[in-house]
Image 1 (cartoon, rainbow, N blue to C red):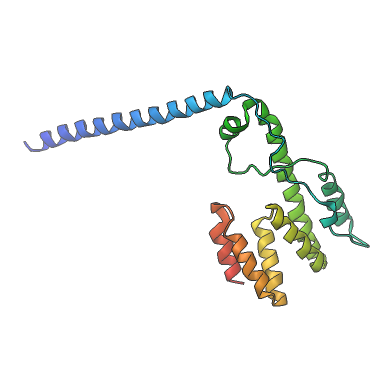
Image 2: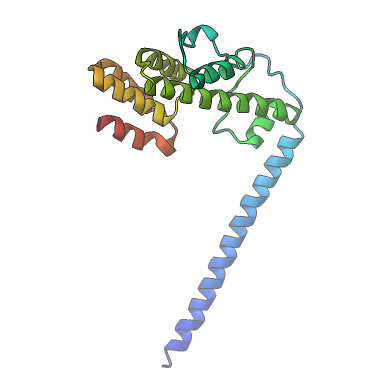
Length: 198
């Protein structure tokens, strides 16, 4: 019993020191984030005219003689992106964008990124619907173009993989596996595993 009090006393002191050290680390991290954000908000506008903009090539969209209303709708919506500037800024924080290109450019950069996101969604849905409606050749061409743009979803990659497996196109399936290795961390391993399991 007489040894219990010193143990509890020293444990309490050690715990208190641990909490203080962690609180100081948390405060340091918070201050670093706030300082970086303050610097980002005062960064002047930079020239963004030479960025690697993404442009949708209308000649890469399928030409169908008798499309369903759903396919025609996807085609019409996608053609609305032909003249729009787009950027894939996924994985880059607003703070990093402001530090690099200036705070005044953030709204237009966000607009370009949102355009790319919406265009990507349409391309993937269009390709998947083409496949569902029996336009497999057109679906493969469109989904490959989606890959080139860096806009393909995991689901579209798997759809391509199934089509390559069905047609015995092993070299294209190997290329698809290589492409899948450059996907974001959150979906990379699962997509690669599903492709290997086809």
